[in-house]
Image (cartoon, rainbow, N blue to C red; front, side, top):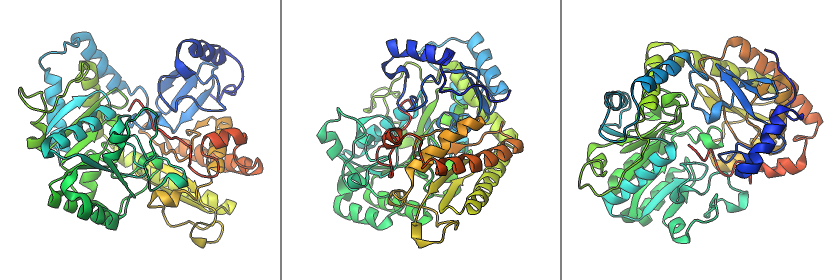
Length: 479
Protein backbone atom coordinates (compact mmCIF):
# COMPACT_ATOMS: atom_id res chain seq x y z
CA UNK A 1 0.00 0.00 0.00
CA UNK A 2 1.05 3.58 -0.49
CA UNK A 3 1.04 6.05 2.40
CA UNK A 4 -2.50 6.87 3.47
CA UNK A 5 -3.94 9.87 5.28
CA UNK A 6 -1.87 12.08 7.52
CA UNK A 7 -1.88 10.66 11.08
CA UNK A 8 -2.61 14.12 12.43
CA UNK A 9 -6.01 14.26 10.70
CA UNK A 10 -9.20 13.36 12.50
CA UNK A 11 -10.55 9.89 11.84
CA UNK A 12 -10.74 6.43 13.30
CA UNK A 13 -7.41 6.88 15.06
CA UNK A 14 -8.53 10.09 16.73
CA UNK A 15 -11.71 8.44 17.99
CA UNK A 16 -9.80 5.48 19.39
CA UNK A 17 -7.21 7.76 20.97
CA UNK A 18 -10.00 9.72 22.66
CA UNK A 19 -11.38 6.47 24.09
CA UNK A 20 -7.91 5.55 25.32
CA UNK A 21 -7.54 8.88 27.11
CA UNK A 22 -10.68 8.17 29.12
CA UNK A 23 -9.39 4.91 30.62
CA UNK A 24 -5.58 4.88 30.18
CA UNK A 25 -3.43 7.63 31.76
CA UNK A 26 -2.07 9.59 28.82
CA UNK A 27 -3.73 7.16 26.47
CA UNK A 28 -0.71 4.83 26.22
CA UNK A 29 0.80 2.06 28.32
CA UNK A 30 4.47 3.08 28.41
CA UNK A 31 6.40 6.32 28.54
CA UNK A 32 7.36 7.77 25.11
CA UNK A 33 4.54 6.04 23.26
CA UNK A 34 2.60 9.29 23.21
CA UNK A 35 4.32 11.56 20.70
CA UNK A 36 3.67 15.31 21.05
CA UNK A 37 2.18 16.67 17.85
CA UNK A 38 0.95 13.26 16.68
CA UNK A 39 -2.47 12.77 18.26
CA UNK A 40 -4.49 9.75 17.24
CA UNK A 41 -1.53 7.52 16.35
CA UNK A 42 -3.24 4.16 16.80
CA UNK A 43 -1.44 1.16 15.32
CA UNK A 44 -3.82 -1.28 13.63
CA UNK A 45 -1.47 -3.72 11.90
CA UNK A 46 2.20 -4.68 11.51
CA UNK A 47 4.05 -6.84 9.03
CA UNK A 48 7.66 -7.11 7.93
CA UNK A 49 9.17 -3.63 7.73
CA UNK A 50 5.85 -1.78 7.88
CA UNK A 51 2.95 -0.82 10.11
CA UNK A 52 -0.53 0.50 9.44
CA UNK A 53 -2.53 2.99 11.48
CA UNK A 54 -6.23 2.96 12.30
CA UNK A 55 -6.60 5.80 9.79
CA UNK A 56 -5.28 3.56 7.00
CA UNK A 57 -1.85 5.16 6.65
CA UNK A 58 1.10 2.85 6.08
CA UNK A 59 4.68 3.55 7.14
CA UNK A 60 8.02 1.91 6.61
CA UNK A 61 9.16 1.43 10.19
CA UNK A 62 12.69 2.28 11.31
CA UNK A 63 11.74 2.80 14.94
CA UNK A 64 11.00 -0.90 15.36
CA UNK A 65 9.63 -0.71 18.92
CA UNK A 66 13.03 0.48 20.22
CA UNK A 67 14.72 -2.45 18.50
CA UNK A 68 13.26 -5.92 19.19
CA UNK A 69 12.07 -7.05 15.72
CA UNK A 70 15.43 -7.83 14.14
CA UNK A 71 13.67 -10.18 11.74
CA UNK A 72 10.82 -7.76 11.07
CA UNK A 73 7.33 -7.52 12.49
CA UNK A 74 5.29 -10.73 12.69
CA UNK A 75 8.07 -12.90 11.29
CA UNK A 76 6.16 -15.98 10.07
CA UNK A 77 8.58 -18.55 11.48
CA UNK A 78 8.59 -16.92 14.92
CA UNK A 79 4.82 -16.43 14.90
CA UNK A 80 4.28 -20.05 13.90
CA UNK A 81 6.56 -21.37 16.64
CA UNK A 82 4.86 -19.25 19.30
CA UNK A 83 1.38 -20.28 18.15
CA UNK A 84 2.27 -23.98 18.09
CA UNK A 85 3.75 -23.78 21.57
CA UNK A 86 0.69 -21.95 22.87
CA UNK A 87 -1.64 -24.54 21.38
CA UNK A 88 0.23 -27.40 23.03
CA UNK A 89 1.39 -25.99 26.34
CA UNK A 90 -0.16 -23.55 28.78
CA UNK A 91 1.84 -21.64 31.36
CA UNK A 92 2.02 -23.59 34.63
CA UNK A 93 4.27 -21.39 36.76
CA UNK A 94 5.81 -24.44 38.45
CA UNK A 95 8.62 -26.76 37.44
CA UNK A 96 10.36 -26.21 34.12
CA UNK A 97 9.61 -26.98 30.47
CA UNK A 98 11.90 -28.50 27.89
CA UNK A 99 11.80 -25.26 25.95
CA UNK A 100 13.18 -23.30 28.90
CA UNK A 101 16.04 -25.77 29.17
CA UNK A 102 16.77 -25.53 25.44
CA UNK A 103 16.74 -21.73 25.52
CA UNK A 104 19.10 -21.57 28.49
CA UNK A 105 21.44 -24.05 26.77
CA UNK A 106 21.32 -22.00 23.58
CA UNK A 107 22.08 -18.71 25.32
CA UNK A 108 24.93 -20.23 27.32
CA UNK A 109 26.44 -21.60 24.11
CA UNK A 110 26.18 -18.25 22.29
CA UNK A 111 27.13 -15.58 24.85
CA UNK A 112 30.70 -15.80 26.24
CA UNK A 113 29.91 -14.76 29.84
CA UNK A 114 26.93 -17.08 30.34
CA UNK A 115 27.58 -20.19 32.41
CA UNK A 116 24.03 -20.24 33.81
CA UNK A 117 21.00 -18.17 32.88
CA UNK A 118 17.58 -17.22 34.27
CA UNK A 119 14.67 -15.96 32.18
CA UNK A 120 12.67 -12.80 32.89
CA UNK A 121 9.87 -11.05 31.05
CA UNK A 122 11.63 -7.69 30.56
CA UNK A 123 15.10 -6.21 30.42
CA UNK A 124 14.39 -3.97 33.41
CA UNK A 125 13.78 -7.04 35.55
CA UNK A 126 17.06 -8.52 34.37
CA UNK A 127 19.11 -5.44 35.25
CA UNK A 128 17.32 -5.13 38.60
CA UNK A 129 18.28 -8.70 39.50
CA UNK A 130 21.86 -8.18 38.29
CA UNK A 131 22.39 -5.36 40.76
CA UNK A 132 20.59 -7.19 43.55
CA UNK A 133 22.75 -10.31 43.21
CA UNK A 134 25.91 -8.21 42.91
CA UNK A 135 25.13 -6.60 46.26
CA UNK A 136 24.28 -10.00 47.74
CA UNK A 137 27.59 -11.45 46.52
CA UNK A 138 29.81 -8.58 47.64
CA UNK A 139 27.99 -7.22 50.67
CA UNK A 140 28.68 -3.76 49.26
CA UNK A 141 26.43 -0.75 48.71
CA UNK A 142 27.58 1.30 45.71
CA UNK A 143 26.70 0.87 42.05
CA UNK A 144 28.40 2.68 39.15
CA UNK A 145 26.52 3.67 36.01
CA UNK A 146 27.36 6.02 33.13
CA UNK A 147 25.80 9.21 31.81
CA UNK A 148 23.60 8.44 28.79
CA UNK A 149 23.04 4.77 29.64
CA UNK A 150 19.56 3.49 30.40
CA UNK A 151 19.08 0.27 32.36
CA UNK A 152 15.36 0.20 33.04
CA UNK A 153 12.78 1.69 35.34
CA UNK A 154 14.08 0.64 38.79
CA UNK A 155 15.31 3.28 41.21
CA UNK A 156 19.02 2.45 41.40
CA UNK A 157 19.57 3.25 37.73
CA UNK A 158 16.69 5.62 36.86
CA UNK A 159 18.92 8.63 36.52
CA UNK A 160 21.25 10.46 34.14
CA UNK A 161 20.09 9.25 30.77
CA UNK A 162 19.29 12.32 28.62
CA UNK A 163 20.23 15.17 30.94
CA UNK A 164 20.20 18.93 30.53
CA UNK A 165 23.71 20.40 30.37
CA UNK A 166 23.45 21.79 33.90
CA UNK A 167 22.44 18.35 35.23
CA UNK A 168 25.42 16.48 33.83
CA UNK A 169 27.89 15.65 36.57
CA UNK A 170 25.29 15.36 39.33
CA UNK A 171 22.34 13.11 40.03
CA UNK A 172 19.57 13.64 37.46
CA UNK A 173 16.69 11.24 38.29
CA UNK A 174 14.21 10.57 35.49
CA UNK A 175 11.31 10.10 37.90
CA UNK A 176 9.85 11.54 41.05
CA UNK A 177 9.41 9.19 43.96
CA UNK A 178 12.96 7.84 44.19
CA UNK A 179 14.40 7.91 47.72
CA UNK A 180 17.48 10.14 48.04
CA UNK A 181 19.37 7.39 49.85
CA UNK A 182 18.85 5.11 46.84
CA UNK A 183 20.24 7.74 44.50
CA UNK A 184 23.15 8.33 46.88
CA UNK A 185 24.20 4.69 46.41
CA UNK A 186 24.65 5.20 42.65
CA UNK A 187 27.78 6.86 41.27
CA UNK A 188 27.45 8.37 37.78
CA UNK A 189 30.53 8.61 35.56
CA UNK A 190 31.09 9.85 31.99
CA UNK A 191 31.02 7.12 29.37
CA UNK A 192 34.30 6.34 27.57
CA UNK A 193 36.36 8.06 30.30
CA UNK A 194 38.85 5.50 31.57
CA UNK A 195 40.60 8.01 33.82
CA UNK A 196 37.33 8.76 35.62
CA UNK A 197 36.81 5.03 36.18
CA UNK A 198 40.27 4.62 37.67
CA UNK A 199 39.77 7.63 39.95
CA UNK A 200 36.41 6.28 41.10
CA UNK A 201 37.88 2.90 42.00
CA UNK A 202 40.85 4.50 43.73
CA UNK A 203 38.41 6.36 45.99
CA UNK A 204 35.50 3.93 46.34
CA UNK A 205 36.69 0.55 45.08
CA UNK A 206 36.18 -1.29 48.35
CA UNK A 207 32.51 -0.18 48.47
CA UNK A 208 31.54 -0.79 44.82
CA UNK A 209 29.28 -3.81 44.37
CA UNK A 210 28.80 -3.47 40.62
CA UNK A 211 29.51 -1.49 37.50
CA UNK A 212 26.67 -1.63 34.97
CA UNK A 213 27.14 -0.36 31.42
CA UNK A 214 25.54 -0.46 28.01
CA UNK A 215 28.62 -1.42 25.98
CA UNK A 216 27.11 0.81 23.29
CA UNK A 217 24.85 3.49 24.81
CA UNK A 218 22.07 3.21 22.25
CA UNK A 219 19.59 5.08 24.42
CA UNK A 220 21.26 8.29 23.26
CA UNK A 221 21.66 7.10 19.68
CA UNK A 222 24.97 5.30 19.30
CA UNK A 223 28.04 6.18 21.35
CA UNK A 224 30.61 3.62 20.24
CA UNK A 225 32.95 2.52 23.04
CA UNK A 226 36.71 2.82 23.07
CA UNK A 227 38.15 -0.65 23.46
CA UNK A 228 40.45 0.66 26.16
CA UNK A 229 37.44 1.91 28.14
CA UNK A 230 35.81 -1.53 28.25
CA UNK A 231 39.15 -3.12 29.11
CA UNK A 232 39.57 -0.65 31.96
CA UNK A 233 36.16 -1.59 33.34
CA UNK A 234 37.15 -5.24 33.31
CA UNK A 235 40.52 -4.60 34.96
CA UNK A 236 39.23 -2.27 37.68
CA UNK A 237 36.25 -4.42 38.67
CA UNK A 238 38.38 -7.56 38.76
CA UNK A 239 41.00 -5.84 40.92
CA UNK A 240 38.39 -4.51 43.36
CA UNK A 241 36.27 -7.65 43.50
CA UNK A 242 33.29 -5.80 42.00
CA UNK A 243 30.79 -7.32 39.56
CA UNK A 244 30.92 -6.10 35.96
CA UNK A 245 27.49 -6.14 34.29
CA UNK A 246 27.04 -5.68 30.55
CA UNK A 247 23.51 -4.53 29.77
CA UNK A 248 23.12 -6.10 26.32
CA UNK A 249 19.35 -5.70 26.17
CA UNK A 250 19.85 -3.74 22.93
CA UNK A 251 23.21 -4.98 21.64
CA UNK A 252 22.57 -8.66 22.37
CA UNK A 253 21.66 -10.66 19.22
CA UNK A 254 21.03 -7.47 17.17
CA UNK A 255 24.77 -6.78 16.86
CA UNK A 256 25.80 -10.42 17.00
CA UNK A 257 24.63 -13.68 18.50
CA UNK A 258 27.30 -13.35 21.19
CA UNK A 259 26.58 -9.68 21.88
CA UNK A 260 29.08 -6.86 22.15
CA UNK A 261 31.19 -8.90 24.55
CA UNK A 262 31.98 -11.28 21.71
CA UNK A 263 32.78 -8.36 19.40
CA UNK A 264 35.02 -6.63 21.95
CA UNK A 265 36.55 -9.69 23.57
CA UNK A 266 35.75 -8.23 27.01
CA UNK A 267 33.81 -10.72 29.14
CA UNK A 268 31.68 -9.35 31.99
CA UNK A 269 30.62 -11.25 35.11
CA UNK A 270 26.89 -10.86 34.36
CA UNK A 271 24.94 -10.08 31.21
CA UNK A 272 21.37 -8.92 30.73
CA UNK A 273 19.46 -9.60 27.53
CA UNK A 274 16.08 -8.76 26.00
CA UNK A 275 14.50 -7.15 22.94
CA UNK A 276 15.91 -8.93 19.87
CA UNK A 277 16.39 -12.31 21.55
CA UNK A 278 12.72 -13.10 20.86
CA UNK A 279 12.02 -10.68 17.96
CA UNK A 280 9.56 -8.67 20.05
CA UNK A 281 8.01 -11.28 22.32
CA UNK A 282 8.31 -10.20 25.99
CA UNK A 283 11.54 -12.01 26.87
CA UNK A 284 14.50 -11.04 29.00
CA UNK A 285 17.36 -12.92 30.59
CA UNK A 286 20.14 -12.58 33.11
CA UNK A 287 23.15 -14.85 33.02
CA UNK A 288 26.81 -15.07 33.87
CA UNK A 289 29.24 -16.69 36.24
CA UNK A 290 27.82 -19.80 37.84
CA UNK A 291 28.88 -18.78 41.36
CA UNK A 292 26.88 -15.55 41.06
CA UNK A 293 23.86 -17.15 39.43
CA UNK A 294 23.71 -19.83 42.15
CA UNK A 295 22.98 -17.06 44.67
CA UNK A 296 19.45 -16.66 43.33
CA UNK A 297 16.61 -18.24 45.27
CA UNK A 298 15.70 -20.52 42.37
CA UNK A 299 18.24 -22.68 44.19
CA UNK A 300 16.57 -23.42 47.57
CA UNK A 301 18.20 -21.56 50.44
CA UNK A 302 20.08 -19.08 48.26
CA UNK A 303 19.98 -15.47 49.50
CA UNK A 304 18.96 -13.35 46.47
CA UNK A 305 15.22 -13.60 45.88
CA UNK A 306 14.21 -14.18 42.26
CA UNK A 307 10.67 -14.66 40.93
CA UNK A 308 8.34 -13.82 38.06
CA UNK A 309 4.99 -15.38 37.27
CA UNK A 310 5.53 -15.22 33.51
CA UNK A 311 9.23 -16.08 33.39
CA UNK A 312 9.75 -18.80 30.81
CA UNK A 313 6.26 -18.57 29.30
CA UNK A 314 6.05 -21.35 26.68
CA UNK A 315 5.01 -19.15 23.75
CA UNK A 316 7.68 -16.56 24.55
CA UNK A 317 10.36 -19.24 24.90
CA UNK A 318 9.30 -20.72 21.56
CA UNK A 319 9.55 -17.28 19.94
CA UNK A 320 13.07 -16.85 21.32
CA UNK A 321 14.19 -20.28 20.14
CA UNK A 322 12.76 -19.65 16.66
CA UNK A 323 14.43 -16.22 16.51
CA UNK A 324 17.84 -17.54 17.50
CA UNK A 325 17.53 -20.44 15.07
CA UNK A 326 16.70 -18.15 12.16
CA UNK A 327 19.49 -15.70 12.99
CA UNK A 328 21.92 -18.63 13.18
CA UNK A 329 20.83 -20.36 10.00
CA UNK A 330 20.00 -17.47 7.65
CA UNK A 331 22.12 -14.47 6.55
CA UNK A 332 20.30 -12.10 8.89
CA UNK A 333 23.34 -10.20 10.12
CA UNK A 334 24.90 -10.07 6.64
CA UNK A 335 21.71 -8.49 5.31
CA UNK A 336 21.08 -5.91 8.05
CA UNK A 337 24.76 -4.97 8.32
CA UNK A 338 24.97 -4.39 4.56
CA UNK A 339 21.83 -2.27 4.58
CA UNK A 340 23.08 -0.40 7.64
CA UNK A 341 26.30 0.51 5.89
CA UNK A 342 24.32 1.61 2.82
CA UNK A 343 22.16 3.86 4.98
CA UNK A 344 25.05 5.44 6.87
CA UNK A 345 27.10 6.00 3.70
CA UNK A 346 24.09 7.34 1.84
CA UNK A 347 23.14 9.71 4.63
CA UNK A 348 26.65 11.16 4.68
CA UNK A 349 26.33 11.84 0.96
CA UNK A 350 22.92 13.48 1.45
CA UNK A 351 24.16 15.79 4.18
CA UNK A 352 27.31 16.70 2.28
CA UNK A 353 25.10 17.69 -0.65
CA UNK A 354 23.01 19.82 1.71
CA UNK A 355 26.12 21.38 3.25
CA UNK A 356 25.13 20.38 6.77
CA UNK A 357 27.60 19.63 9.57
CA UNK A 358 26.57 16.22 10.87
CA UNK A 359 27.88 13.07 12.48
CA UNK A 360 26.30 9.94 11.03
CA UNK A 361 27.05 6.94 13.20
CA UNK A 362 25.78 3.59 14.39
CA UNK A 363 26.72 -0.06 14.14
CA UNK A 364 25.38 -2.91 12.06
CA UNK A 365 21.63 -2.40 11.73
CA UNK A 366 21.50 0.75 13.89
CA UNK A 367 21.92 4.26 12.51
CA UNK A 368 21.50 7.83 13.72
CA UNK A 369 22.42 11.32 12.53
CA UNK A 370 23.46 14.02 14.98
CA UNK A 371 23.18 17.60 13.70
CA UNK A 372 26.32 19.25 15.03
CA UNK A 373 26.66 22.92 14.09
CA UNK A 374 30.21 24.04 14.72
CA UNK A 375 31.20 20.62 16.03
CA UNK A 376 35.00 20.45 16.18
CA UNK A 377 35.26 23.57 14.05
CA UNK A 378 34.97 21.80 10.66
CA UNK A 379 33.51 23.23 7.49
CA UNK A 380 29.84 22.82 6.67
CA UNK A 381 29.17 19.51 4.95
CA UNK A 382 32.19 17.81 6.50
CA UNK A 383 31.67 14.58 8.41
CA UNK A 384 32.49 15.30 12.03
CA UNK A 385 34.45 12.99 14.29
CA UNK A 386 32.11 10.40 15.73
CA UNK A 387 30.70 11.54 19.10
CA UNK A 388 32.01 9.33 21.87
CA UNK A 389 30.63 10.96 25.04
CA UNK A 390 27.31 12.36 26.16
CA UNK A 391 28.89 15.81 26.40
CA UNK A 392 29.58 15.64 22.66
CA UNK A 393 25.85 15.19 22.08
CA UNK A 394 24.95 18.45 23.80
CA UNK A 395 25.83 20.13 20.49
CA UNK A 396 23.06 18.25 18.65
CA UNK A 397 20.37 20.49 17.12
CA UNK A 398 17.31 18.85 18.67
CA UNK A 399 14.89 21.05 16.77
CA UNK A 400 16.23 19.86 13.42
CA UNK A 401 16.53 16.27 14.68
CA UNK A 402 12.86 16.18 15.68
CA UNK A 403 11.67 18.39 12.82
CA UNK A 404 12.98 16.29 9.95
CA UNK A 405 11.60 13.09 11.49
CA UNK A 406 8.17 14.63 11.71
CA UNK A 407 8.49 15.62 8.06
CA UNK A 408 9.41 12.01 7.20
CA UNK A 409 5.85 11.03 8.11
CA UNK A 410 4.66 12.86 5.00
CA UNK A 411 6.74 10.40 2.97
CA UNK A 412 5.39 7.29 4.66
CA UNK A 413 8.50 6.75 6.77
CA UNK A 414 8.59 6.47 10.55
CA UNK A 415 11.67 7.29 12.59
CA UNK A 416 10.72 8.14 16.16
CA UNK A 417 10.45 11.95 16.36
CA UNK A 418 12.14 12.28 19.74
CA UNK A 419 15.61 13.68 20.25
CA UNK A 420 18.63 11.34 20.12
CA UNK A 421 16.60 8.22 19.34
CA UNK A 422 18.32 5.62 17.20
CA UNK A 423 16.77 3.92 14.17
CA UNK A 424 16.87 0.23 13.20
CA UNK A 425 16.88 -1.97 10.14
CA UNK A 426 15.44 -5.46 10.04
CA UNK A 427 15.78 -8.57 7.91
CA UNK A 428 12.51 -7.52 6.26
CA UNK A 429 13.88 -4.19 4.95
CA UNK A 430 15.07 -4.09 1.34
CA UNK A 431 17.44 -2.08 -0.82
CA UNK A 432 14.40 -0.33 -2.27
CA UNK A 433 13.44 0.71 1.27
CA UNK A 434 16.90 2.19 1.75
CA UNK A 435 16.68 4.09 -1.55
CA UNK A 436 13.36 5.55 -0.47
CA UNK A 437 14.66 6.41 3.00
CA UNK A 438 17.59 8.37 1.57
CA UNK A 439 15.39 10.22 -0.92
CA UNK A 440 12.80 11.04 1.75
CA UNK A 441 15.43 12.13 4.27
CA UNK A 442 16.85 14.69 1.88
CA UNK A 443 13.39 16.08 1.21
CA UNK A 444 12.41 16.04 4.89
CA UNK A 445 15.58 17.75 6.09
CA UNK A 446 15.27 20.40 3.37
CA UNK A 447 11.69 21.09 4.44
CA UNK A 448 12.60 21.14 8.14
CA UNK A 449 15.38 23.65 7.47
CA UNK A 450 12.94 25.87 5.63
CA UNK A 451 10.60 25.46 8.57
CA UNK A 452 13.25 26.47 11.07
CA UNK A 453 13.65 22.96 12.51
CA UNK A 454 10.72 21.61 14.48
CA UNK A 455 7.40 22.88 13.16
CA UNK A 456 6.10 23.53 16.65
CA UNK A 457 8.61 25.19 18.95
CA UNK A 458 6.63 24.22 22.03
CA UNK A 459 6.83 20.55 21.04
CA UNK A 460 10.48 20.93 20.14
CA UNK A 461 11.09 22.26 23.63
CA UNK A 462 9.20 19.32 25.08
CA UNK A 463 11.58 17.07 23.22
CA UNK A 464 14.68 18.95 24.19
CA UNK A 465 14.69 22.30 22.39
CA UNK A 466 18.21 23.22 21.27
CA UNK A 467 19.76 20.69 23.59
CA UNK A 468 18.90 17.11 24.55
CA UNK A 469 17.63 18.38 27.90
CA UNK A 470 14.11 17.01 28.09
CA UNK A 471 14.17 14.74 25.07
CA UNK A 472 13.34 11.21 25.94
CA UNK A 473 14.10 11.62 29.63
CA UNK A 474 13.07 8.05 30.08
CA UNK A 475 13.60 5.27 27.58
CA UNK A 476 11.04 2.61 26.83
CA UNK A 477 9.68 2.03 30.33
CA UNK A 478 8.47 -1.45 29.57
CA UNK A 479 11.81 -2.83 28.45
